[in-house]
Length: 257
Image (tube, rainbow, N blue to C red):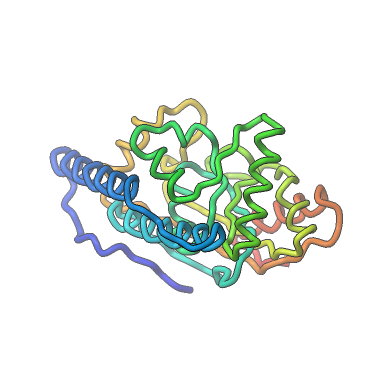
């Protein structure tokens, strides 16, 4: 098992210190977002641009993981080549955490593109936005995912389509598994768990209020389990359920199939 630990010093707790910590992190987040919002990505081909975007996004995510005191305990092996990574979904921290470990093009909800300051930066760094409940948007997202995989970039997907408190894994949408079957791309299941369920962002909890609470915390422990890659050969619906069970087994600490 590997452990990735942030380099922030141990901070004293208390209302004043917690507020100061949150303000420092917000300022750092804003600085990173502004810097990469305008920084050019020069590449000779569209495929090379996708790879450069994924590498830069990984660097941005790794910096934000460090700044926000996210303490990662990692089990299993992250994919080294292009793959489709499917994970359970606990909130907005998920793509940040996984993209810090694997250069990838995450599929994210369209609402994230409209977040002040952050949204334009995410778009510039190659995130693949999809409008939930819109079949045409979903099909376009799959086409962009295919281009990313063809370019040698992994794709990160949260097939539940919504978030939970980590106590279960909801049914997976099948679209990405049909693409995996057609391309022969490996699918890597991943389970994520927060020590404190309050770190999960679910329901109608406003983003600003939740993020403020997270930014005040000295440390946020996270467990990430990578499962064995799998090639999809059968029906996408059956593959979706099989991979959902794999993620759920990893979540519960059970050995993979």
